Length: 466
Image (cartoon, rainbow, N blue to C red; front, side, top):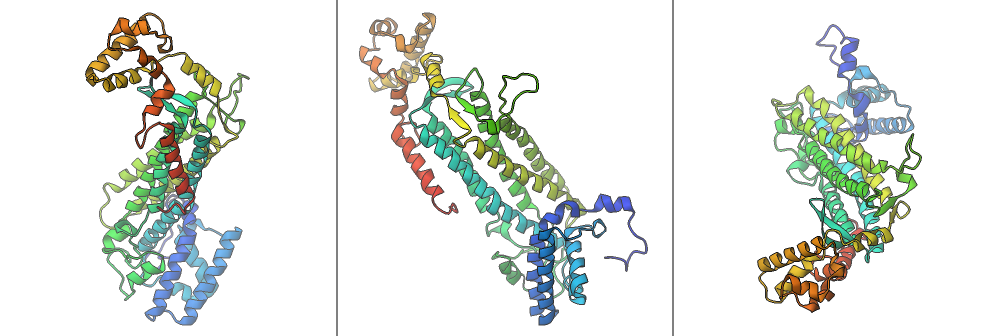
């Protein structure tokens, strides 16, 4: 590759140390896609003949078949995916293969290939997996409209909510993630294509960079060759999107881990997503959820690694940038796997809601979740909210000291606390009444929850590109 300048060969240790083909071979589709576009442009400006362009296209067809069939020989001594493919092309078609790199550098080549890969994976793999998870969650929410569960703040019982409303919260988080994946690499400043930028200061031949960009499905070419070959913002954006999605998955996994404990018992997770213990035969461990929670740190770590990699690089391309790919590859792999596993967790077969156990928790009266209804009722009677808050607090203290539940209160109990607590309040002291009071757009009333589910279902029924 550079024998004209060097008289010796790299040490074998150095070859192993510097090679990237063991992982960047994943870019082969995009490398061929970019090379075909560049070859067409070289033919347009007269560097390649029509026959040479035809030979290049035929050569790439054979290389594609070899890679897809597993017959392609990846060579460490050729360092990376780009040189491996170019070398094989030259073996197949001769000098036309040698002409392909005219005016092009591996710097603009890898920036182009890597960006195209990130766009494809975000849209064709991550987004559909996120949509599938939203679908699974929406299905479970639709089946559990009538189930009321405690909602928590500070991990203390706060107010009742519909289980469907809680599940919708998960669906909303992943819905937003799916839209980010869909938009990744959109035609904006981050969607510009580097091909034609050369090593960093532009191309010596009159290639049309706008035409190259359009031939790769983008509308914009890079505006600055130096920035283009060293830019990895697209990789940061994708790994950030993955890290954020993983944080969402981890939060819902944590809820399910807690909910599936004997102390809660709200849900039972199926055999397909749990495991047993090597010593305790009674155990059902929520391994799928625990692994999702654990892998989140791994993906967040990749984001920090990328930031650290990029923070001190001088213009333009530096070999440090070889280290970007493994972080992105693993981050997307783990996120994709976790989205799919969580969809399995939320499948009908693996997500069983224990309604009787939930009702037992509600009947216990722990947390005095009805208190909010008291304060709201007092406001409707003309009592200032802060005064109502004080009265309600005293009522909570009263039932707590007597070891009662709100459900056990009588008219006499209310009057003993404050004369403004009228007997008609008793009919308001139900969790169902409290969830139905929340009639606002994003509230827990049954009609509102059904409306939000309908919106999600409508989105799921479309092409999901909005």
